[in-house]
Image (cartoon, rainbow, N blue to C red; front, side):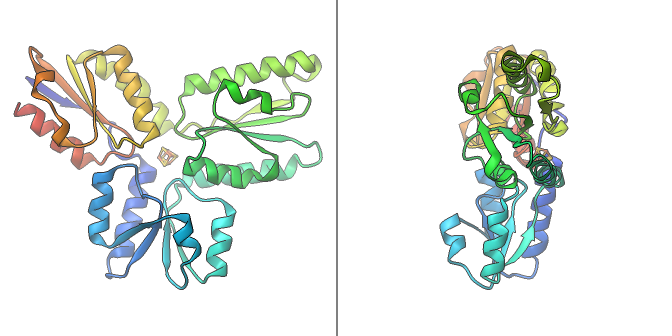
Length: 291
Ligand code: SF4
């Protein structure tokens, strides 16, 4: 059986950068705390835990003093930085530069639209770390929209500034933006274009993967998608494969591979999410080739 690895699979630039910053900070043997898991991948998390990185919750963070805390690629709201200053915590900031620049843009838009009571609408997953950071940047006029069902939260007579979590599907974001535009048109036909500003904030590291993965999944008899179960990007990209290839399988660890999946298959493709380490994808591909 021929086995291929999808070339763009593996850590995105933001996660790779955060892991490199963590490895660097751990070099002198000091304990470094990390707010939440550095990446949505248990296997990579345990590798870094072995080097001294300790994942902590927000409750634990609130009780820490005089230590070093790493902020992962997803970023954090302003309240986290304020708490660190209060408790003499040194922040090692590994926020992805793309996320950081979106936070700054949101802050600026919120400030500039204060007089017109502009609404900063964030399309994203509730509770996701990046979304919490973006909502924090938006301040009190921030509105979280997780899907069509939340669109009633928007006041369509006031300006809307729309942003998306970086890892959402481009197609779904366009659908949400279009419904908002139509709703604005209903209440104020003269302002339908000026009252909505859609910011293109889906990360190209993710959106570029969708079409590439679709093509890759169609080319192979069996697809093995490797990702942590709590990675929203992983779930979304796996759905892309499953839609075009029903013989797509999601695994989070090499032990989950099942030889039955490859019965009669002439080719298999191995791919993963932006939070899947490349070394793990490689390891899975070698195991599949030996089946
Ligand atoms: S998906 Fe894009 S924005 Fe998110 S961490 Fe990776 S590179 Fe940064």
